[in-house]
Image: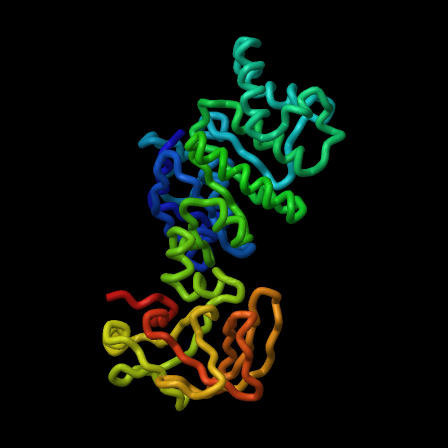
Amino acid sequence: MARIELHEIAHSYLRNPKGEADYALKRIHHVWDDGTACALLGPSGCGKTTLLNIISGLLAPSKGRVLYDGRDVTHLPPEKRNIAQVFQFPVLYDTMSVFGNLAFPLRNRGMAEGKVTRRVHEVAELLDLTPYLKKKAAGLAADAKQKISLGRGLVRSDVAAILFDEPLTVIDPQMKWHLRRKLKEIHEQLKLTLVYVTHDQVEALTFADLVAVMFEGEIVQIGTPQDLFENPEHRFVGYFIGSPGMNFLECTIEGNVAHVDGADIALDDQTAAKGRRSQGKLELGIRPMYLEVHSKAVDGSVRAKVRAVEDLGSYKMVTLTLAGNTLKATMPDEKSFPEGEAWLLFPPHWVRLFADGRLLRS
């Protein structure tokens, strides 16, 4: 496996880019250690597939370098980088058996047939493909075909990294869960370097050790799922991670209070001090699950109007308006919900403050 370093990567599809707006990828500078499972997460058009193609060698960056274990591979093609790739649609030899598909990369490298057989059976066991080894790939279901595609990457024990480009998009939800779990098990067992591109936050957060959230050609934050949820460093991360995303309210700071169009929200000393020092446009952020909804006024709460209550089985989703802003809050299913109006409490330790879209840090 390999340590992958992206050194000041930028890319434009234009021959003569004139400014930042002409770049599909802006400054990318990061290292993924050997054995890391990392997801590139973001909406369509954010640059994640472009970045994966640069890592794989399908695309040479306009600027910067790609290093595998300290070796510059920036201008090497994929076959010279010793990687495996798994695409959205499985790339298989339909007329071959499952065994033949898994064995092909090894036979192509001249491995002795006894070793080929042993390795194919090891990988088939990992992926629950053993019962299908003698069957033709053409007759199998979509999830089994994607397992074969994955197996063709895993069967070579010498690969530097395995790269996945939205491999579960065409798989039904139950099979997605099964394949994500299987990928997680394989990574924990083999400690492979995996890079996984997806627009699905559930896939990214359940699969990866580290998630790189991309927005408009930049990696705006890399962190564990807990980091991204509790401490989003960019407004987009707060919005994109979570369902629904983080609530945001424009505010001004005076003393230890955030003013939101007449509503006063208490802040802790540290957060308030950061806000007073900032010169940018300030926004207060809080996750729906941390926003408390009360039917009566409690100390420090602010009045809001209840617009809708959705019963989602294990919890209720409440839509409210506060000073002209729409907010979402979750409530336990067993808790009675207010009608008409409610009182909102913003626990200070769950409030985050952003200036010009970036999390304020001390």
